Length: 613
Ligand code: M6R
Image 1 (tube, rainbow, N blue to C red):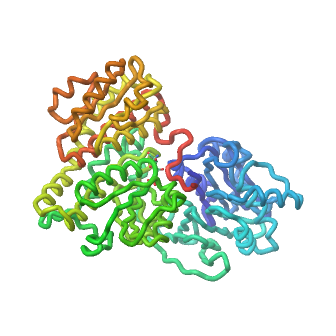
Image 2 (cartoon, protein in one colour):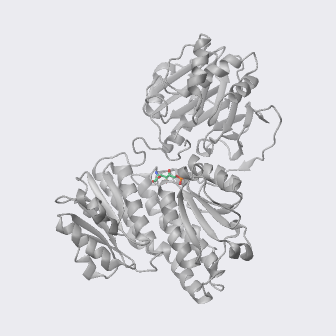
Image 3 (cartoon, helix red, strand yellow):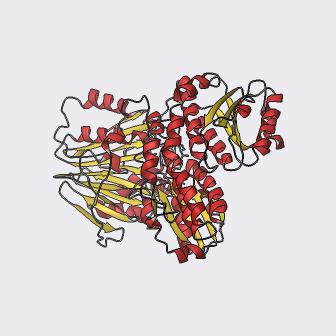
């Protein structure tokens, strides 16, 4: 989603800003722009399209060293919300005087009424964006103090924002603020960087300050002063970034997605390491911050998330009910707070998110806290908003996930959910012996995944038979039903093939009408209760001409024979098997997308972290 970079310091400002935007490309965007303070005016360059285009444009127009003395600038990658992804709609936006420039992540919900009022005061707008309205509002409030102007403007807006603002009358200074959209400030040696994501900062400094909601920062090359929107000073700690530079490079792989799929054995080992207690037959998840008594008193687990994280939650639902004997429910995070859910102190809410910044999941977390539930997070990005607001939870330790399509985060989420369920289960009906058995199965996950990753070339061959169609249907049952949903999501988001996941039993209640000669059906027919019924469903598809790719348990040649093509999944506990099964579907989606020539790491219209509701 949108990305912000701002810089004050001695280095070449344009280079730092464009370098920062490059680091944010993985988030997904469709236009980009940069603004500098040059002596007593603001200069702007914007393009529709990629950062490479912005770089070329800047080189062409500013390449003569004209702005070499600039010390201050802001830049942005825009993921269109209000208005198409054109150059005019790209950020930075200027106010009516051209003296203030602003970049913004989030949505100004009352922008229409603000715009009408400003137009009534003689303002003229060039773009269709809510952001330009905010820039004009700051300009209108500016009576010679940019900080105060930003405060006054932000008091008038409804919605969410992460902003960085500069004024030609105050060179050497950036005003940054947040409500709902992350802002992190890198504190360097004689230079300061403002960004929406630490990835843009790590090349300059490891020392960062995360803004909380309603914080506003006055940023200069040598200092960061923090206040709240009522001008009351606030203090935030300086944190050390723990970002792995190597993980942000492709390391010889053609795409980040392929690299991240291959990284899964190691990522899973990191997620599991030190967290299994073979003696007690349980797991050690100290971040949950719960005593055995508190766990014993829980009446329900509510799992919330979006997209892939929601699918991990669906596997978790099976795990909590099956292993821990506790009522579990999965909630689409976007729906949670609008549904007025019944929650209380005996409910454990687990917010699942790779980024820890997803707006809908964050809103659900806040609602859960409000309702007195026991809220914890299952997040990958350390220090992200959801992890900070929940204050307790379990990190995935999957390492940075750059590709928009989530892969290693999903498998690590499921692994951690299994360990959570094991812990709860041991406080309830699970015996030590049963606990040990499951712990041993969980310990095998990296090796099981390795066995699937090793089949990548074979899966690439199979993908050739399925890459030309425009539709594909995924079916599964039991814990493999969420795997079918995730397989379909992976395929549709990176290959643009229309793909749907269904419970295998649901087919004949409607979706089977879609099947035609050679329609691909990807059937997850590993050993789970009800497999025989799935085999029946597969026959129903074959009878209507569908071409079947089956996921079957290792050495199950009888089932494999029912399929047109098959991929073998190592034998293991049925909940554990969801992980290697999904890895096979990740590889399938990857190879189909590659054959179709798609832009795999940054699929059209998608953003890595969705920070608007
Ligand atoms: O960062 P999160 O896990 O909260 O993100 C949730 C979804 O936006 C994300 O999983 C999305 O569905 C991915 N593109 C799936 O690959």
